[in-house]
Length: 376
Length: 221
Image 1: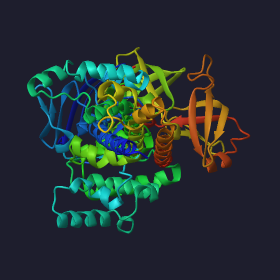
Image 2: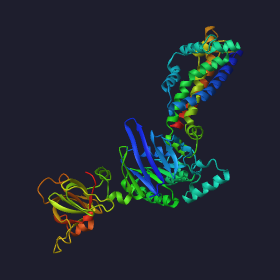
Image 3: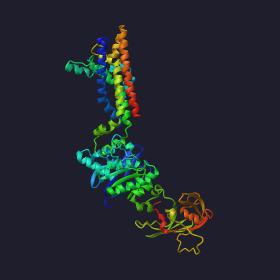
Image 4: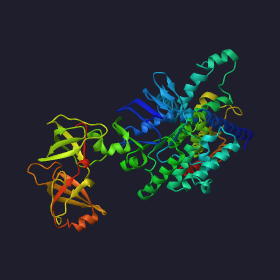
């Protein structure tokens, strides 16, 4: 990955310290984490609105900030576009006035031409003379994007761009935003506390917690290989439990959990070799737990890896699917309170198998559905 | 109305207009600095600017004499250098009215600037605007109603100023005797007709000003 963006920031505020270091290439980097983790502060440092105590910020090989070299490019000259939370459109200016705000030093004709071009590209021609308060949520988002993009910035920053919207609109605008970012081909940093949003918009996801980065990875890697328990917890990963290592090789890990011997795939990109008898954190994706039909004879270990059985102790109807909470047929305390495993079955499966009536099931786990975490 | 009353009225308007202009010039930057900047001695500035609101006007006038009088801290060097003193001129009335009106303007304008979303200013910075240009193009236009309301209040306060003006400018008919001072003189010398005329005019003016301020306030909210 060639880094278009290198970020190292330390900033102390009363009661909070931001200390992060990450990099990103082309496309969208999503800063993900709970509120108050320092994501917006990072954007403000990138834009030059807040001065870090120490660190270095490089965009496209241009040093914007370097505490050692004494470089601090003011926000006016950073060529960084900023889409603020709630958009921060100038209420006393029209859409055209907003979009053209950053074009003041261009000539009148050139400015007008660029305004027209941006308005057309974002489908805002019809609203050019309207004021922000007369726009819908989606039009406001486009106007804010247009204002930031009109000056051809080297980097676009987006702070919770969708949080001002209600849910149905949010999904539509997420797609629209994705289209605009892809169409403009601009490197962007996006802040969100919504994992779905981070996952759908980010090519790379940087996970924040309490002022620190706990993982930065391409999005595909993040869900299957969270680097630690705290990443997994922040990402809302379910069935995060602890077992004991039996044997680890480069591509397999055998572990003991709740009286079962389970086999898991070792991480293909960074093999992890825990010592035998050491505790081991892993998680099981609820949608990958496979219930075994009772009307099919011949259940054998060869076809069904990691075979177990248990009873449904609780269930939740999610509309299109059901979440079942299973307790294994094993003595001892269940792994997660009153249950061992949470699993998700499509509504149709729930009805065909008559799970409402039949509570005891055998199930299997493909070894690829068990994800081992590198540290406890 | 007597010629003295008419000249008092003209002088009062002149003083109030000048004091309001000075308030805009001095008070708006102070209000902006208090609302947006961090600087050494900020709470002291805040205190000094607010004090005239609660101190008796004669006390403020006394301080102004200490500062600007012929033997004052600034007044003495000025007098020694030029042989001129601000005391007992209509400029003194303007200064007294300005200082007395400043708290009203600064507090109103500061509240208006505080209510402007800071992200709007930040957006302007990222779009290439300097802080000064941002103030002129974003902050002040958006705080406009609050600023106008503050100026109206300052004008009204300046128009009615009595105590500090009396201390620093005196009560010289035709030169420093503004309407409130002339009313006092008229009552003291038993010219109740003159007093009544000036009282009615001043009350009417104040009502007009207050109505204007309320309208602006309503639009701000």
